[in-house]
Length: 340
Image (cartoon, rainbow, N blue to C red; front, side, top):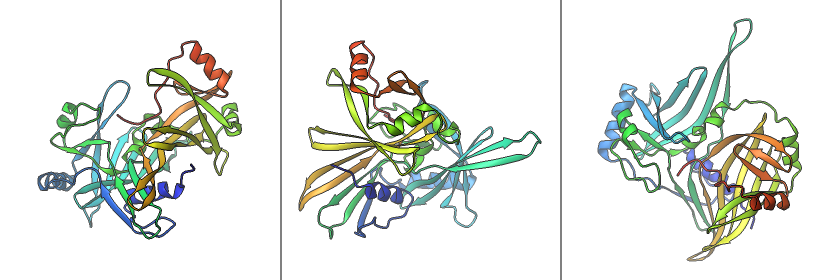
């Protein structure tokens, strides 16, 4: 089963607020999984916008959660639109925001970096990152039937620093906390420290060349109490530094494909995904279900003897290398993910 990439394109467009159809022109019915803000919550958010208060993003990391302040900068002519900005030394991160229909939407993730040349001249380089987010699309086989699109939210933002620090747990399910916001859209694009800090350089080194030439990679995983080597099909993209990793299997709901996109930057790799595609039986026949979990993860990439070292884990170049690692007691890693 091959995924239809137009569904992912549609999801990304809707996260930006563009609610037009994909390539087939069918009607799109859009809803958001997080409940709209109550009148009291929306009034509190509008008051924060008027005062240009910060919002606090509860970011997850290996050392535990931390609360990061993002400054609200409303547009002068329309306070329902504007920017959310975080400055960390020479790094400036931002989203465009929109408050509409009781939801806070974040889009257009941007990273700007200030640098100083030897002659003292100051320059700023900007990088627009892909809009990655959580959502689901259901496309009936009947071309006249509308496509259903649900925008989800897993990032936790707060109106106050104390509310952010006291919130918990960060695992699912997450109970509602006073002052908590769940924006829909692209917040996950800037959740990973490695993605924030990555150097914008051409892909270099033997690891990039080996990955581009590979047909399969093997990930050591543990499921149902047993470790096994999972084969991921490698599909080069439209450029040597881009491509896809795909695995097809069957679970209790039937066959599915799981897909990650990737980009090679300098001596690192950035993963986009995971995205899942499956065929389900609808009321009027088969339907295509596409779901995506917002993530942009950047990890160092290096070539070792029989594998690619990607951050803390290895992607094995052949099944034999993976099986030897399994027999030697190598601890399986969880699938790459941005949240609980």
